[in-house]
Image (cartoon, rainbow, N blue to C red; front, side, top):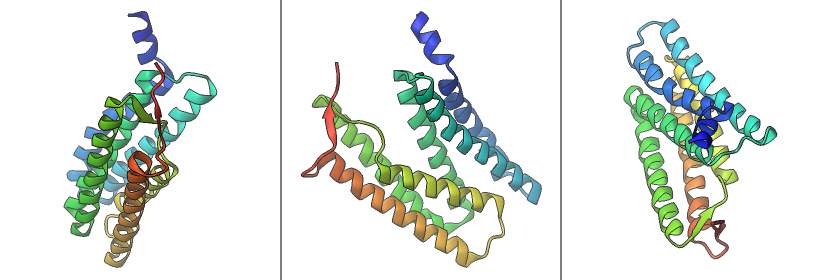
Length: 190
């Protein structure tokens, strides 16, 4: 019981929980926005979420605060944030719908592949570089699309293409990481 409290109340895990709390606030503000300041507020909330995502990992590694709970919370907060952002932007920009479909396909594949490998006593040791780059590109383009609601359609289209390419590249890398000839899965430490 004491370790559970220690895990919950360490700074990186609190930051991940904070990111999860920001999701419904962002959704409410963004979907009800009519004025530029409302989009800006949604963008600020998104930017705060992105910053806390960058900071929590650095704090965890620097101060040796990595916990099993944190290894679970951080990616959950990332994926739920990305999913919600992709859905919200798909509602405003139909060109983002293929990005949403690709995002869902990639995440569903990763979840199933991770489960298959886990049952074999194996797992990936963290995110791949391609996944980290993809996350950075998505958060950057999504933040700009939120902050600038009247962006020129050509720029929105360009963001959709760039996001799609990044997602596809990361998806392919994860396929090879889980099941390729030079798989990156490792035995789970007991």
